[in-house]
Every structure is written in structure tokens, then in C-alpha cells.
Amino acid sequence: MKTFRHGDVQLIAVDGIPDGAKSLGERKMLAAGEKTGHSHAVDLGELFEDRNGVLYLKVQKKAKLKHEEHSTKTLAPGVYRIGIKRQYLPDGGWANVQD
Image 1: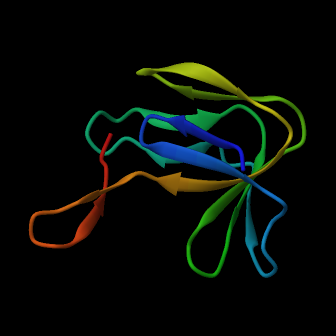
Image 2 (image 1 turned 120 degrees about the horizontal axis):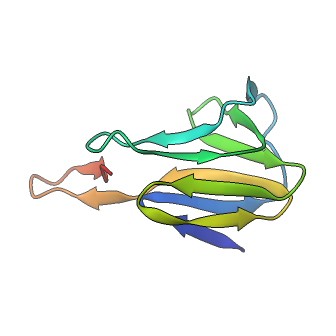
């Protein structure tokens, strides 16, 4: 399994888009920066969202993943599941890491 980390965003190479996932079109932003206003964005690709709210990125040609505070990564063609890093909270819950 190929995994890429880009700050608090994780991309995991998968075999395909799950059945029933809806296209969000060629939206460029994968995750917004809640604290800084910076965002993780791609220059190419199509986003999909499954029934559980999980995002998938389909890249047909090499794409660039950018963020103002991280180095640019090149993504090979394929399908990626998008995840946000989470952290354990002292009260026993979990929360997404805020960038």
C-alpha cells in the first residue's frame, strides 16, 4: 500500500472509487487550514465523496499537491483515499489535527 503524508493530510493509493461515491467535480482543495487559512490543494484531479463522507481523489496525469507550509509533492496517476490526521484528546475523544 502506497501512502503519502502532506502535513495533516494523508493520501492512500487504492484500487478504485467505491460504488455509490458522488463526484464533487474538479474541486482543487483537499483540506482547508482551520488555523492558518492555508489549504492542501491539487492542480489536477477529480474528487469523489462516499456515503460516509470519505474523500477520494482520481488523478489521470501527474498532479502537484501544494500547501504554503510544506514542500510540493507530485502524485502519480491513480486513485487516492484522503484522510486527515487525528489526535487523541484527554477527555477520551478524537479530533482532526488542525493545520
